[in-house]
Image (cartoon, rainbow, N blue to C red; front, top):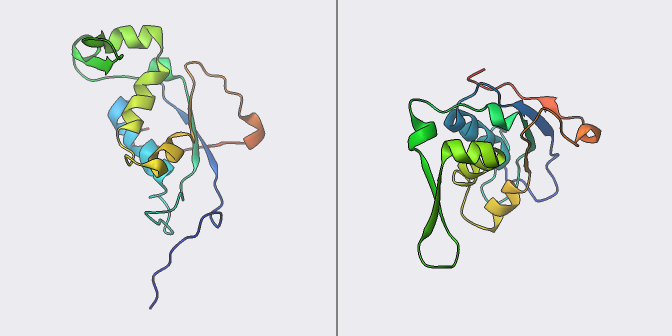
Length: 144
């Protein structure tokens, strides 16, 4: 019995559409990360990009549990002394796409391949997206 290993360019990549309204951030991000990595396929190969493209709409209607809108703090380094911080509520008002992108990015591999996988994620705050030509199929999420 031989083990199957996918080769780059051998895998047909599909496009999925996810509506984030009313979904929890963590549960949605894990499912998106699995599809971007290709772990939903039987032909998953760790060193090859076997994942699909994911388009997320309605990012501003995402949910957190408990008091995370006020208590969760995002921190980043700007190059100057100290860190910049903002709450999840402020980030949702300012740029809601970043909440989902950061959650998914931290679940992907920390390598060149992980950055290629993250490029296949497209997140939009509203219900419109410019990827109609790719005909994305609605993705059935577990927590729907």
